[in-house]
Length: 170
Image (cartoon, rainbow, N blue to C red):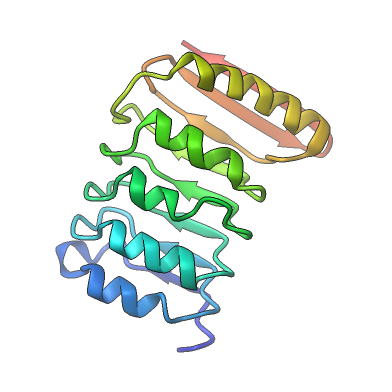
């Protein structure tokens, strides 16, 4: 199993706990990990994954109700992470996203949902405007970022080749 690159545990429900995920973190070649809707996975798991899964490109944490901003902080400055799904994670706040998001230099897709527990702060609105500039000039994010239903509508960045578009739906 050392060569395992992709693992989807999303259908395992409450059977997967931190001890199981910590075992997964010992797989150094894991690139894609789906832990969505695992209600017993906590920040402890995220700490281990962030430290040991250095080739991780994609992680889905949708519906992981026990993770918080502390666990998300573990991914700050992760070198390879391109896709992060935090939709339906009620203990993640805008402040958490604002602190970690800009440190993920390879991020292409960031998914959030209306269950985010605080309103979008003014500073993050500025960051989103800056992200458009960064996308246009630095190529920091290429892909789609959905901030759907986050108290202030839908922001969607779409990039194809050198063209980037920002869509906002209220």
